[in-house]
Length: 485
Ligand SMILES: Cc1cc2nc3c(=O)[nH]c(=O)nc-3n(C[C@H](O)[C@H](O)[C@H](O)COP(=O)(O)OP(=O)(O)OC[C@H]3O[C@@H](n4cnc5c(N)ncnc54)[C@H](O)[C@@H]3O)c2cc1C
Image (cartoon, rainbow, N blue to C red; front, side):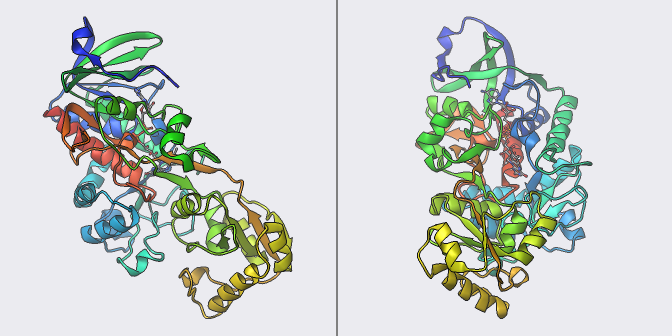
């Protein structure tokens, strides 16, 4: 991780521009690639630099789920009705507190056009719904619920529709060889056809300013530093800060310990700090995805208990929502309680099979192992079982299809020490055009940003697909805006 200063360089100190373009984009993940494609389409000459040795960033590692809706051809072919209003209403609830209402409005309004643009870039989606609880769908499925739309509390508030559009990729291996690679492969192929110059192993280190205006950047490649002039502006698309322990401790301490990086080492927050160094405001820097550390196939069918033996969320919602609730509200203290039938079902369906930490016919004995007060577990199970007999969950409203009274012998999976995969979703404050805003809410001339360098659609609550969706959609808008700046 580079520790070089991000303090901006006054243009008076630049004696030679070693390269120049209308637009300089820092980062060639999905946000930067999308920005570059649209900037060229709007008539700009674009140079992209990326600190890594090739394209991809976190995008290439991702599951390739993109949050789209409003009645896409994939949704229709799978038999779902959706509307812009329903998509907006759901995201407003699910991404709060403090949802980015202005961004949500243009995002939902533009979702069908964005779907068509991705298809024009060569991205394909198979019109087939995947319904098993999981982080990723196997090859051959192009649509799934990725935000808890069909679960409590949202299902009762907004007509549910699946909106996780999964990029098609042959021979996927969920978690190891995922579809995000196919997304960025198509975006960078489109970028190449458009004639964008990309320089790899080239890190943007700090911005160059002429008064308040950003006019370029200093970059470094294999130890050699040079200045790149950006006649119309710079787009920061350099990912988030989950790989920067100091920034995590400072801004998102709950994500700093007991977690592992979901992203790349270049998620070091430099893009955000470069923006801050010229006066940019930030938003929701404490927010992030925290992936619940048990297989969704087991989670949905179990009772999720906190450190005191009580349930605290419906287990059948989006596992990222469960992860956030556990990390931010329960101090990462969680147990899964289930029985033999559940264990067998989950073992058949789960992506990773695990054995329970303790097994017993006696809830009192398990309570002692778990360190919770006597009688609490019996009460929790009695309430759950009584509801399940009637096909309902009066406490947390888990859907009837996941309810079944638990029977001895019981198993408990102790997740108190289990690490959570995290990436950050807070970042630079931007307008819907991708302009970076200062503390007064005014655009900083010549500076734009997109993707996880910014705070976007997933402002606090996260749904799978909103990061790739936000990064590509607002990357495009930043590209168009900077090209005409
Ligand atoms: C395993 C995994 C699964 C995921 N699944 C999904 C999913 O299904 N759906 C979803 O929406 N999201 C998913 N995500 C999250 C999503 O992939 C990222 O949030 C998203 O790709 C961010 O895009 P980006 O363009 O902002 O960043 P990136 O794709 O990380 O691109 C940033 C680029 O900037 C470069 N860079 C960094 N610093 C500099 C610098 N100073 N100068 C020049 N270049 C720099 C990096 O090398 C990188 O190439 C997943 C992430 C992971 C890791």
